[in-house]
Length: 227
Image (cartoon, rainbow, N blue to C red; front, side, top):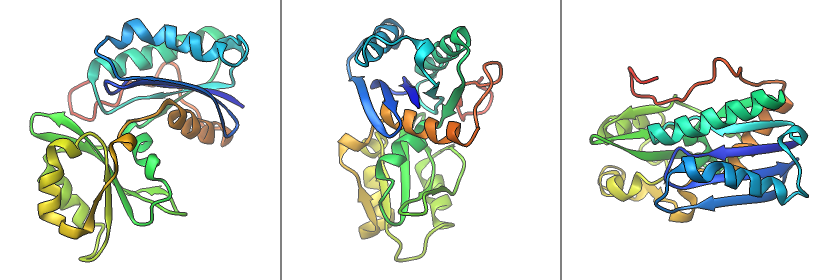
């Protein structure tokens, strides 16, 4: 199964092609340049790494739907929808937060991906890691204290919590003050949603016969009133 993974929900854009569980090619850039100008060339380059295949040769496409940069998400989702519709391939929307949290997939305990949402808020979600990976909350947008209050509902006084994401740069101190030694912070290399992870999560859904509709898949901005 060949799956293309796309994420432009953060400044670090990433495109990857996987076949089954193997990464064929991945292109990731962290530069000050609009995703709109670099996304299609990146997709073209990644596909050619497999021997000049075309979108018609894909079994599907997975795209990060947010939360994150409003403009970036729109670009990624619109591009994936257009590509899949043109060649009649299934599309799957993947939470940016889940993709980041999945970098710590095998960490025992709770995994909390957080992104800086500006306006003194974070985007965050809570997952259970280890052999029983599962989502415990929806994607949320709220002040860090509110997120930690939500976290309290899923932990005990001695539970270890693993945080990952660019929100640590702004809110790491507040987390450490609240949780103390219970808080563990991932290294910065794990803070980004990789195209390969998006593709892997999308492939898992497609294997279960689960996909989204070209007509109804939309960015998940999380903040109310934004579509």
